[in-house]
Image (cartoon, rainbow, N blue to C red; front, side):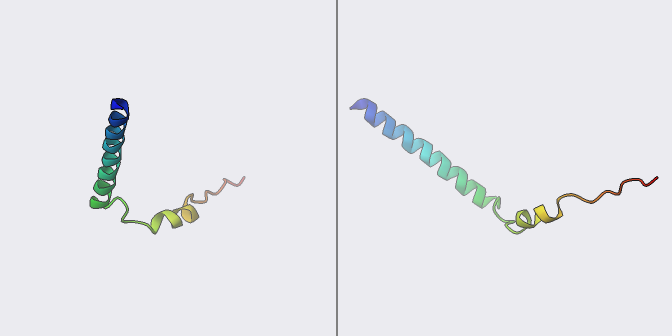
Length: 53
């Protein structure tokens, strides 16, 4: 029974850690730019001209 309680406490600690990381990312505006990644693939590489002989 004590192992079960230990696993519950550890799982709650891990869950709180990930929730804290999520709130930190939201607070520091990590998810602010949601437009650029969807358009970045369209303008990824510039065309380079091959030298003509």
